[in-house]
Amino acid sequence: THDGPVLVLTGDTPLLRGSSLKALLDQHRQHHAACVVGTADTEDNEGLGRIVRDADGNFLRITEHKDCTPEELKITEINTGCFAYDCKSLFEALDQVRPDNNQGEYYLTDCAEILRKAGKTVIAAPELDITEAMGVNTQEQLAEVERVMQERA
Image (cartoon, rainbow, N blue to C red; front, side):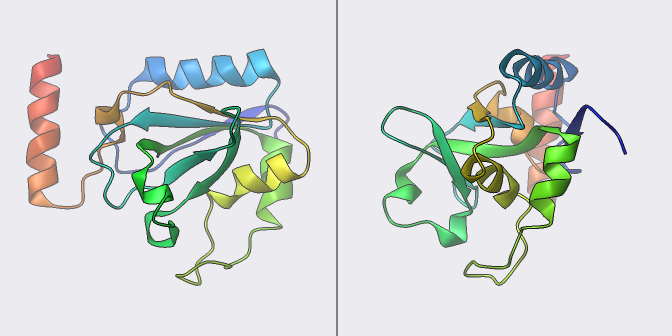
């Protein structure tokens, strides 16, 4: 098996920059982290997983929108779907993922909390611009992504 970092990304985020992925890998190496969660900040967080932190600002978990408490719904730091994992740690965590949520689904995002609870280093790094997390699931979203790409050019 691979012994080193692995990037886990969503497949529908065409605005993701290579420099942001490099920043996640840099954080992973610098902190010797089992997992680095790429985050962004936005008030427009409908449907997005929230980054829950403790009183000291340390990562606790990712809570998917449908599972959020009213307090968690107010959180503006969101999961971008970009992760840098230690490969061995990722596979250890995957064995422990359970469908213990409102949807009865297996959430890949649970791996970060599983690793934190196991005493491993997990950090949430606000390395991404919110546009990098924009997914394309509708014609409207495609048009918005195209607009952002043209602005970047």
